[in-house]
Length: 115
Image 1 (cartoon, rainbow, N blue to C red):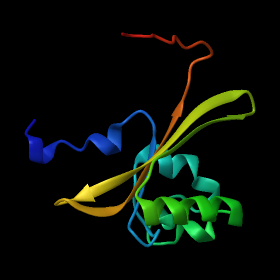
Image 2 (image 1 turned 90 degrees about the vertical axis):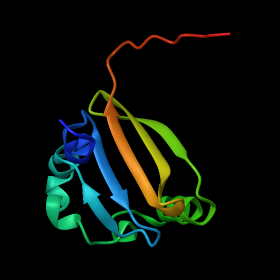
Image 3 (image 1 turned 90 degrees about the horizontal axis):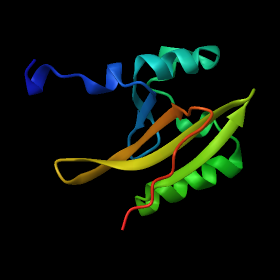
Image 4 (image 1 turned 180 degrees about the vertical axis):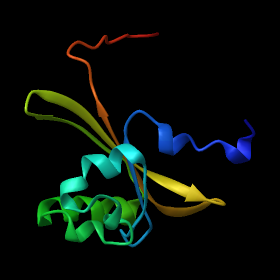
């Protein structure tokens, strides 16, 4: 496998969604497409994140895009805990948008404190 043929995102064991600086979805991996199937799945690529979220979430997205900042939180739905991590991504040193990963967490998870 060469660096140019390595498609980490497609096979990453979490849902990965990428948007540009305007909030337009530009990429989704297999898990994200499956997770958002009831909302359109692959057809969401090319649409706006702002059409997919209520206003309180849109305010957070706008702030992230303006300030190039990270947003992370846990969500529990139907007894399944997930970590949602949204962070800026850059192309050739320029802010290019946001990447969201949604990872299912195990029932118990260790916390390690290091000095």
